[in-house]
Length: 500
Image (cartoon, rainbow, N blue to C red; front, side):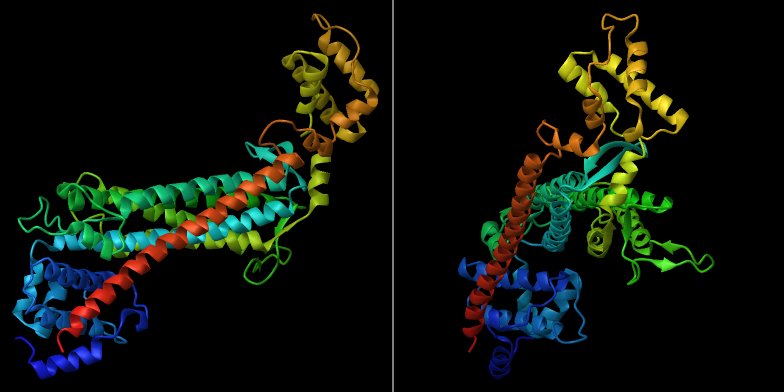
């Protein structure tokens, strides 16, 4: 039943508080159902779809339901069919006039997109924080020479900063994926009703503007039947990518713990490591284990929504559940937070890393490269020469910096015998030893994207700029949503005020 005027005046005085003065509520299903009802009341009144004489009572009812739901411990209905009875109780049956040209299908599709939009921004925020930590560490270790590995075996010398920037590039692609997906999520389904629109001339664009959307879903069938199923699957794919990047990094660090003298360790204590219950010498990397597990959980949840969307008819609810899809995003955020903590907890020993490089033949390819670049020896012949040196050195347990120059000359002569390139090793002893020096290898890299100082400086600058740009993008998107909702509050407050 409609509220009497005296009661209506009390409701308005209690609940018609300017939006800017209210405490920011949780942007859950209940919140967005309230915003959609507020926007519908304002737009349909302005455009003659709702009788202006009824609008104040309806607006007061909407305001009361929202205010009641915002009370501590109050129920916050998450569906149209459980929200509407509260509206009817607060404002009478006339409040159902709001349902001109809308249904639970388009309303639910809209709040799912709005919630996923917020969640993607939260994921983008954590991704940017982790990327920032990664790039700062890369800057700190721009000149720290370490071994890099392929197939689990030490392969070539590199700088740790260059290695970290490689991981940062992967995260930057994840940031790109979020921005691209956001465009597809940032569209309003309101006004499409079940699947083919309505005979009511709704202003869908104005509704989208009030709810902070950048556009509308153009095709009414697509809105709740196709697009609303695509969105969580695409978001899950992004989470999968961030989790895979997280797991790749963690596993690379984890292999160090199999060594008796690692060159990367976690700072002990503080939840980073723990002492084995049986073996007192062991310091187990608990933080690495937890982060790897979190990344695996994220992948598992993200794959779940794909299975839910598989082999069902369009529009079914299986992959649309807000709680489940929010869990996917939050699992990705949790894994990225763990990675951020790992980065801040690592202890890197440049001396031990260089010792490992000089104890193995990770610089041997440089022999073949220099012989080809400077002395025009075909690479495969130079490769055979370097490989023969390594075989001999490992048989005799000779380290690179100790390898006898005389033996190098002998092995070279044996390698080129019978080819068109017979003769003595063209390298002097000084050049031979410099070629095997990991530090000089890094310094002499000349190709774009390498670890040499000039390229590191260039790539660090770009990486930092990308992080700054992503931060600005996140702030702009959040500001747009907040500004749109503030405009809705202002216009709805005017409608409430007319009830007095």
